[in-house]
Length: 155
Image 1 (cartoon, rainbow, N blue to C red):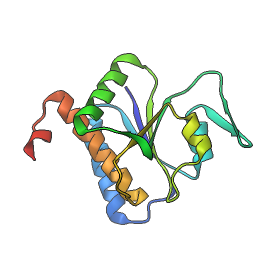
Image 2 (cartoon, rainbow, N blue to C red):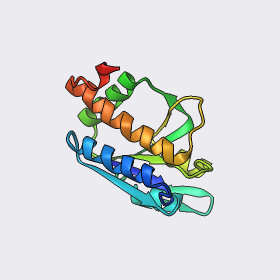
Image 3 (cartoon, rainbow, N blue to C red):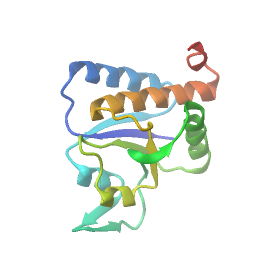
Image 4 (cartoon, rainbow, N blue to C red):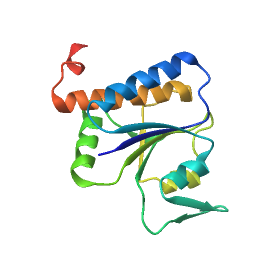
């Protein structure tokens, strides 16, 4: 299973960039992973094999990947449930899995409707750059849960 973590906008904080690189390295021990900065939601949808035409969303014939948005309106999962989500996806779907973190204003309705999954970190509000780091840490944690690594149990 290939994982892509995409975010809208450039990284402004060096600390965020450093943590992003660190967690991408950690995740790479378990699965092929790529971090991608995108200019806007249109670029995200294009990357995933979808395109927006005006206000109407059109799907390309064959999806290139599965899109999971990190969205405050999405489904809340515990770390263990998130690990199970990754395991189930890995077992059932050959397409790359794209996790997307929106910009400061979140995602438009058109982008939400184009996604197969919407997941949430809960009711708290996070800066979008921080949300990316939390997502990366949770992906890493999920793999450690699945492999029985003590990282998750050490809290």
